[in-house]
Amino acid sequence: MRIQVAVDPVALDDDLVIAGDNAGVLERLPEGVFDLIYMDPPFNTGRAQARRSLAVVADAAAGDRIGFGGRRYRSQLLRTLAYDDAFDDYLAFLEVRLRRARDLLAAHGTLYFHIDYREAHYVKLLLDEVFGRDAFLNELIWSYDYGAKPRRRWPAKHDTILVYVRTPGGHFFDADAVEREPYMAPGLVSAEKAARGKRPTDVWFHTIVPTNGREKTGYPTQKPEGVLRRMVAASSRPGGWCLDPFAGSGTLGAVCRALGRRFVLVDRNPVAIEVMRSRLASGLTAEARGPAGQTALPLAGDG
Ligand SMILES: C[S@@+](CC[C@H](N)C(=O)[O-])C[C@H]1O[C@@H](n2cnc3c(N)ncnc32)[C@H](O)[C@@H]1O
Image (tube, rainbow, N blue to C red; front, side, top):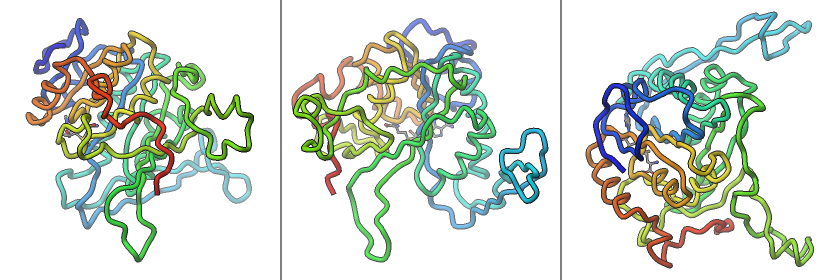
């Protein structure tokens, strides 16, 4: 593995951790190479004034909504009107990176976009625009159970992962490579089936990174290896290249290491680069390092 700043162009001759703004780094990566791109950007939290709207415009040829009298319309996401947090326009920030990510995917490649419930619907419309509606593969729900539970509404305990493919119908997907999980009602299936477990659906129950587990790096937004392992196992080939432009603690790299994939990890935060350096230096995932990782899928809904 090599740690570097972005050079022009970036050569994929080793697993890479690249320090820098991903907009510039993505421009320097070769196109059409990546089996899988995982994006887990900072959620657009903390702003009070974000306002967005949809416009519906007549489009007889490409409209995806049928209106009165059979007329076809296309919905168009209007940009954010005002923001008071770090991003002037969150969707514009994402759009330039998503367009480039699409170019970087191999023809059989897949994008996993991790987002929280407050933004998921806006980002889905943006992804429809960038990839095309027919490239939408799945909406995954990662359900966890941790932290405070408000009493005046249903506690929000899930993230959304939107999955889009580069080529509709032409994507790589190995369902058999994914770890199976227990049936919710094993008594309803044969003993043989119950013992084998079932293939996961689009709702994934998985704990957050345990606070005292070996997997924990201390990076605040670290995601569990078990969640990313499913994506990598299903949507990348052994030896295939995977990319994480918002790499944080390097979870994608740790999973790629364990599953025999190549990786490129990008982050602009020097702390993230240091965390990745020490996490990936050993070449082992938390699970490989010892039995107390507590990350193995599945963890049935524990709420
Ligand atoms: C939600 S965290 C990712 C966490 C990661 N999935 C993990 O498991 O540790 C988002 C990361 O994106 C990085 N980031 C934000 N904007 C960036 C940019 N423009 N270029 C590169 N990295 C960026 C932040 O520094 C942060 O580490």
